[in-house]
Amino acid sequence: MARRRGGIKIRYIMDRAERRRTLEKRLPNLLKKTREFAVLCDVPTSLLVYLPGKDQPVVWPSQEAALAVVRRYKEERDLQRFRNNLDGPEFIRKMIAKAKVELSTVQRQTRDKEMSLLIDDFFAGRRMSFDDLSPEVLAALESTVENKLRAVNARQQKLLGAAVLPPLPTQLVQPPPLVMAPTFSSNLPPLPPSLDASDVRGLPTTEELQAFFMNGELA
Image (cartoon, one colour):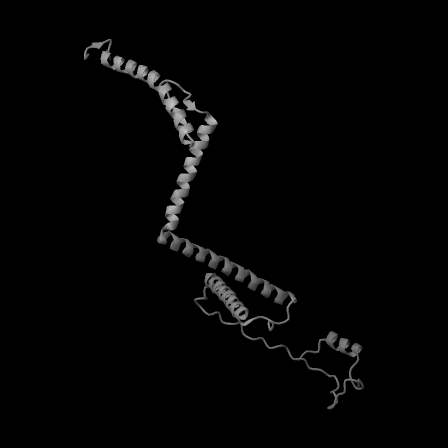
């Protein structure tokens, strides 16, 4: 029927009612066939049906058993995908290359730590020489020291380049003229030609020097 009644198609109402009757008729048979399949074939089986308008589904044999079947299916699927990827030569090559890169990184970090410990022991006085080291370790130690020196030189050059020097004066400032010190005329007796530090004979006394300067006998 194609007529409309109250804005709803009569054929749609009849189809929906027919579907409900078919579901009520087929669902028990579906549960029976599922049970027979699990018993006769001896395989893990579960049935999960969501009914229209119902929040809780129809589960057989139980919710725990259904979850176990679903979990096993997901694990088998992931395992099969892993096996398929593992069988590919390209996947194996990528895994080997990734492992080599990780191993090289760990080895480099370990070597750097060992070299740093050797240098710290030397500066702390716990090691007097490096004669007991193998040629490979000595070569690695030399490379580490050179890298540290290059880093220090680069840092020094950076600091020197960042330093701002004061500007040079545009006009040279002439130094002040020299002022000759005043000369004194003295009536002191001349010193002997050969003066011994231990011989104070003939030298003026302190009182005589003080009296001379107080009188202001300047030239």
